[in-house]
Length: 129
Image (tube, rainbow, N blue to C red; front, side, top):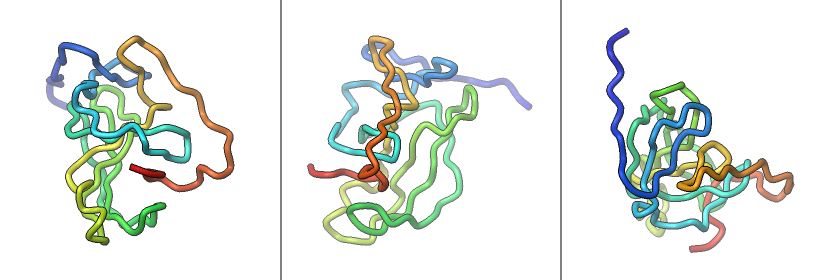
């Protein structure tokens, strides 16, 4: 295995809750109105220090999407997913964007979210934008 090069971000940084690797900037958040099975999720324009997994089709609350899970390069934890393609025209604005699940990342102030025990949060997508 080779040497690991990480991108260091300056500003209000969201980071992996396990290893503190920087993942994204608060200024790159497009929407905080997304939800996943563990609670809140944020849509980011760009993220760093992640590696994508296998592309797969997933049925979400807003329709079918092709996504790939994204993994922290520091520790290998799944931290969210990338929207590769949206099958519905109205959802195409998500293509190429990233979701970071708040349960899996630490906020700029070091805050962490806990798992939501709401049975209605079974899907992964925005409830309203």
